[in-house]
Length: 191
Image (cartoon, rainbow, N blue to C red; front, side, top):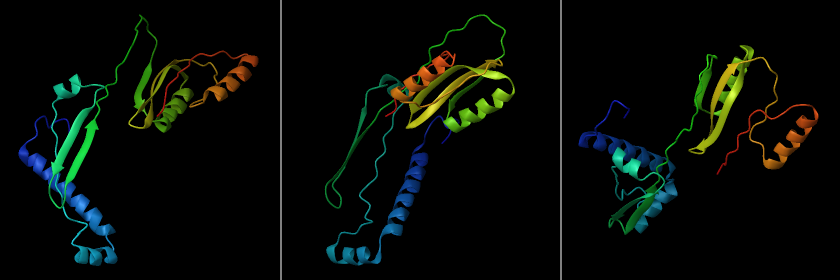
């Protein structure tokens, strides 16, 4: 609903719920073939029966207090059978560690960039004589994201991304022999 919507009314919830029910019902109707529909008439097991809808509300404070611990979700219906919806919500929070020092150097920063966007900024800034100064890679919602800081410079460099340890060691050994030294190293895990 956007950042401007700081409170949610019952009408907002109903409108959202109606929109979701409509989308789900439409998706099911599109995928029920003729044989399924005829079979449902004989068995009484209609595939598009609506069992129910559940909604869960949390405050910002509740999320803040549960960072890293799952919040259980559970809803039970005794409608068209016996049904239980179970799940959980896990809240993660990105934190930053940073160090500042006095200086007058120019700086360009981008945060939370997917690789293609990061590479586009990198290529553009390279042409403007900016070189990567800091790089942080992390996974969020199944996507690798990059935080990067560039500063003025004209040094050459060789870069590799997403290398496993053996490939990294191979590149390291070759570049060492060629006279290059590691400037930035970033290690992260992907699920």
